Length: 306
Image (cartoon, rainbow, N blue to C red; front, side, top):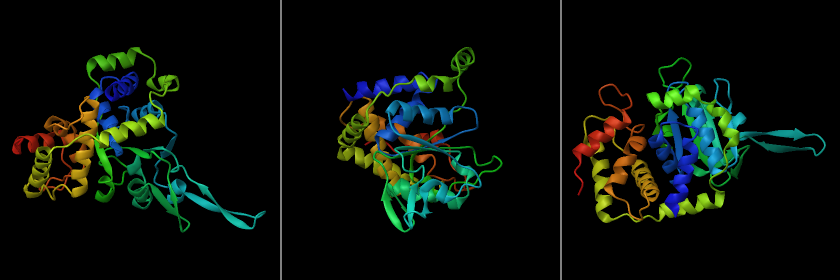
């Protein structure tokens, strides 16, 4: 039952984003695991369109924040404005108070503005004008960023990268998908025609079902062995944190649910590895981020399945 609902969501998204089913499945798994998603790639490959499509198909309230170098934290969180008639300040909520936030080109903003997202992503609340305010549920941040070697970008700090459960890359489309893009309508024109495949209550039910997927002791042994290898290997600056291990477990549970199973298998853990570990590990020799697919292949090859 659950897998049929999820397949319908993926089918809807695939009508807009062509030839990227694996990336779509990773993105959906991330949201089912109640995580935040980072989409990183060069301009023009569909990052923003994917984020728009995810929000539309999930039927959630949506706000887009275009990150620029002059964006201020108050532009995200909100600000108090003095009302002369009432002789008091009134807080005007910013765009962060929405169920889905598209943080577009997040690494074009300054570190001070980027940090305004940290509390929201981790605690699902924001503190503004000395008062803590809860955010709507569910709450997702879908951020896009251009490669850090492009002009006008500020690399995301490791503490903020770690808040994203997954990072995915779209890459160029294959020949058949690109031909369909060239011959078809503009993909953005399809967005208004999309209908929500889920209601918020149904999404909450799927998230609860993902958390309830069984994990055996042997699977936990395998997960811990993968994490331990990353910490002992001289190839990386530092290993995967406990938060990364929890992210791997949550994403693997969501992937198993999507595959129609009520138990996590090693293949589920291996399937989500590229998206979960690629932005958390740095190569020791030059402190650059590793390629997600390459490092997951290395971990899978080095650590035997128990």
